Image (cartoon, rainbow, N blue to C red; front, side):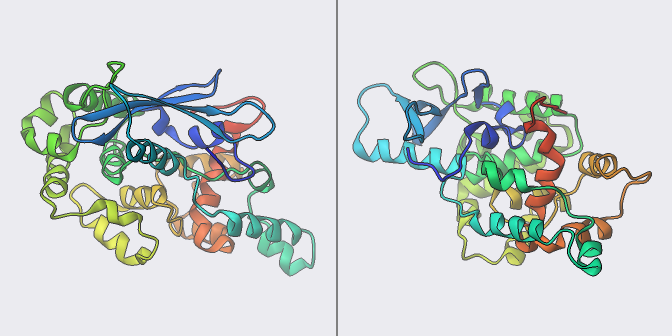
Length: 316
């Protein structure tokens, strides 16, 4: 599979924590990313992707299936993997803006003051950072986003693992795919409380699945770049369980970085990184990243996660 240049699989996989949630599996030592993919109802395959050997670069994709894959199925597996890794997202304008702002450091006093709050992001442009690991479907990302709200990461892992193990279809290797909206909609609300351990999210999870399964809500259309971000944000915010953070987090996974998707962890991390005694106000934070325009949220995220990708990785 061809990739943009530069591209680093590990930077994309570990761009945020979703690689740690079922049904993803990642071998960081071998740099092999794997999971089951649903190509059609009742048709689940196992895929593995890793850096391709040789000077040409790119990615090697391995697909394991029961029986032979048709050409259309092979193409669908490749398409889903490209979506997951954001391979077709154009980040060139973002990198150009980073370089422009970096070049302006140290000029006139007024420019120095304006740029004094800018993060050091030259590394991101040089290494091709900024592609965020996504799920093959918006539905899966929407469910997982709900499972990150107001809880520990350990509980998020438990909830997603329970969903996959209880409702997911098995692939040829036995691992299960993320459940379909139809499978989740068929489960009663008490299943989400008792078996998934979703707590107050139980009703919201089932309602989301019901609306998507019935065709009332077309979340996959949210990846259409022609959709205005403001209107898309309003539609997401109208979902049960979606407050400002969850809305902006899902927008981030849709490639919309106008908002910062702030939560307690990012605010505290920025306070520490910037040497502040108090958590900066949200207004101040928005001003820090305003020079990046529609990539403001991505610039913020790369600042708070830069230490994840240095010589001595530091994970939360």
